Length: 466
Length: 76
Picture 1: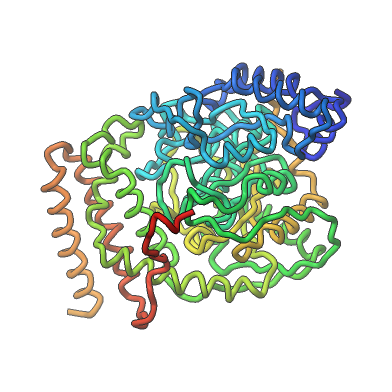
Picture 2 (picture 1 turned 45 degrees about the vertical axis):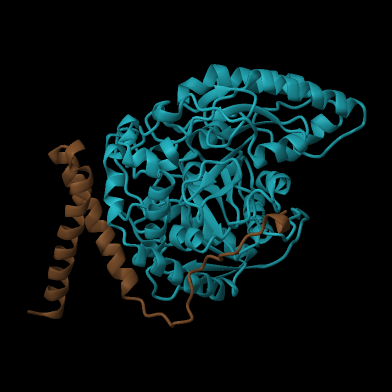
């Protein structure tokens, strides 16, 4: 191999594989070794899928040698958040003690699509128990322990796709799949200094993924660059009869150099609650974005974006885990607050849930009306850099912090990309998010690529190797 | 009593009533500290519900979730 594959963006790594300068089996061995050796350092890994990975890698090697190259993920290792079902006896734990021996007969649709693209599954990655749906408020809410950002052993990776963020950041896998109900892709990507894409709701099949909230759950990639995220989305997107919420419109990632001018908006209230280091990094990013196009302030109409989205999330999560909650099984979860917080959700009245869903119809129209004027609305990716590992945090999904971007983006099911944009307090990564109209993944990815073409934050990596 | 005070009183009564339901269902398995946590959760839910209830909608504003009747011989 002519280039070091660790921290090599997907397009370059794929070219090494396509031209047979890199062997899929050697790549699998390399990343499996890193997962086994370094994964425990960050509590990033639940299961290393060594046997499956080597079988998939050997198949890829044979196919590529025979001239049957499938595309840019062929022979490339990846990891999957441990809420995606995997057959073959590989556990799917949902990050939670009551499910740590759970096994499924078949792969989730996303895993099957990646297999069809020739990808090599190397690990099931750590996550916050039940994707954080029980109301956790500290980083230790996982039976695999608190996952740390590779930038500091004392700071949280973010959640709930904790291991997906940490593993990409530490070069344990070239990319990973995560999920987001409210903040679970953007949070870990931001805390770990990598790129992440939350697709439009319905773009990617949820079949075989743990259901937390049927009308909010999305699956998407975390990777080194926005371009990498687009390549992965291309492989996993599309209609699936097994998930009736998937949309029929086809998706093809368009990565051509555009040189286009962008129209960026900044949402009123999106700076609220952000720390000074995040705001400073955001201001520096705005200067870069002004070189790429126009930036203007805008605002969403006065609607209870956060309250409505929170009611929907909490009511659906309480129903999805009704058996566990009613039986008292939540006492077996790791976070003490998860032992009792879900009981309060019996106080959500059906009429209020339906009202929230009716308001959602207004939300999607109003969000689209505002976003139609822009290619992307931009904001600080997170309110702060990664929190200390032993500290409680506030969140929009629990109602203890403002998160208008998260509420609009998830409540209206809109795509967003997050990329690193600087260094903040304690030497930890800061981040920038791009929010777009429904089905405009290519537009927000193009904007994020243009930003990354003018900056090098995505090429900085934590000091992982001795 | 001002409108705000009346609203706060109504909210407090609603929190008390809903918390009583939750406590009746699950109280036996919770200690006092956990019950305090549940009460705070109920308060947050009532706060969110009041914001949602304050939005005026038209009769035609349907829930943004489509229901479709099902036939096995027409499913994909």
